[in-house]
Image 1 (tube, helix red, strand yellow):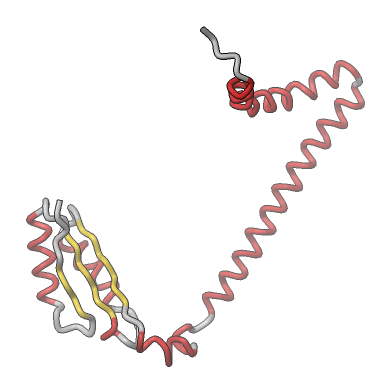
Image 2 (tube, helix red, strand yellow; image 1 turned 180 degrees about the horizontal axis):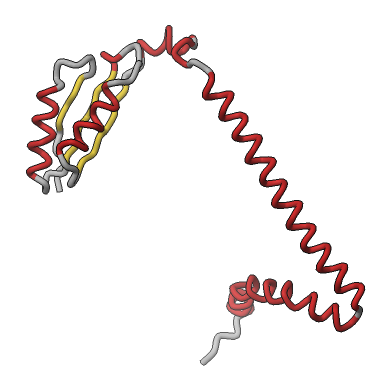
Length: 162
């Protein structure tokens, strides 16, 4: 028994609409070339021109965003008012999750955080969270945390339970 509900029919039609529009776009130049050669060529030229303009428009936006990014990257945020005055009251927690990483990868990830130039390193807690189901990784993380416990950051190791 088929459902003749108008919503059901419209839902089935709407799901096929994108492919129908695509087929219409591909068939239109062929049909127009058969009706009138000049109109068909005009449609093809218009279609190609439209997408060429759209492509260049996207390049303009990409270029503008890239120039803005370069300007933002030149700014020294360590000299801003927020970092100089207000950041001493902000507490940060970096969660560093580990699952099957080797010892040197774990150590490198920790060193990449330790070697930043943030002024208030005492406000930062590094939460190293190895997966409990990888006991070797848990031991490696504990060794590395013990090795760098005297750094300016607070380092905590809390294994993530499975």
